[in-house]
Image 1: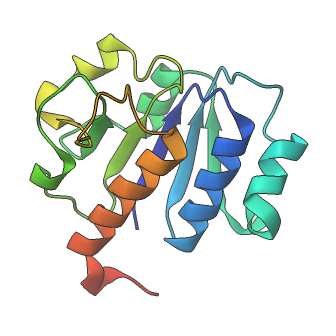
Image 2 (image 1 turned 180 degrees about the horizontal axis):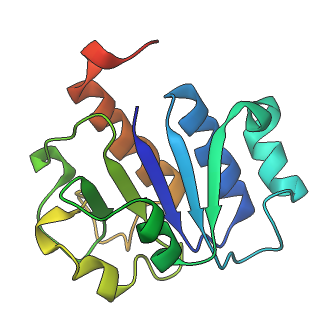
Length: 155
């Protein structure tokens, strides 16, 4: 349905949680290295992904350049960030879109955000929270994308 892109994730539990979500929504999960943990087979990833991990369409890349060489950049790439005022409510998602989420400690690199500023989206927060947990942010945006495309959902 969609492509969830995690750029240099740091917490294996978040990767596992997002993997489970990706499976539930029939999304492809793209993981861009380096990770902040050993490898994707770590116990924490498997525990959060439970028994869905082996069914998941998950792809790994050594860096963002390799990812873009295999998934050419276009207007269907959206970047979740706290560094914009355009909310995810304002985006019009289509099946096959790429939804990017950055490191838990730093977010997406500025050079990625600069690639297409009009594709930067944020999740509004009422208080002065720095950001949401990355796995929660993926859930919020992915389910909005699903809401906009319910007619194409197999579920």
